[in-house]
Length: 217
Image (cartoon, rainbow, N blue to C red; front, side, top):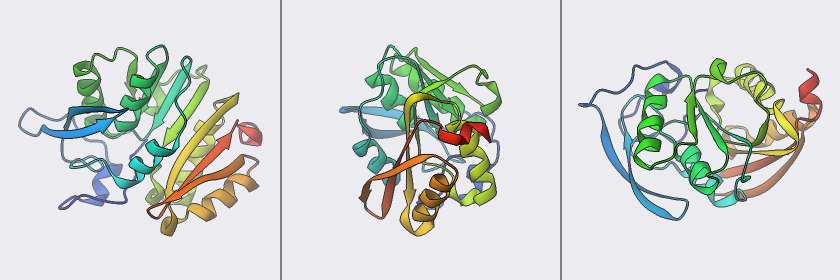
């Protein structure tokens, strides 16, 4: 899935996030120093993905808010970008399989590079259609691509939230002025048990418990 647009880095073209990009060449790769899962590290980023120059604010709010990931099962980072959420999940739960999903091939290439350098063998970077149909999710964390439009966003969320295991939960971070409250209303009307669990820096963090009736639609 595409990574979300807001906020963008200086000089970044917001439209780039929604188009498939080739894997980054060695000339395009650059380093970014970040702190994930309580560890300071240097990761690879490149242009043509979401927020290549920093750990974006929405993702920071999400990672500060979510509980620790389940220790086993399948975990999903939906719209992985260069991988901050997937890497955090994998570091916290080495016994789980972490699916880093994006339509951007460059983003997937970066996740693979970063996971390999960190010695994380439990990260699988994949396009949406490459995740097996029988995978059921123990957790889903996402900074979703709000600007793809409501119809595309709703279709995407139905697809992946319906794959939550009955006792699993998803956490989404959404900017308030880009429709966090209306998205929560839509989720509730669609039959998903949804709770706002945090609000910070202009972002809402929504928790969705189980697939609800989304799975039947």
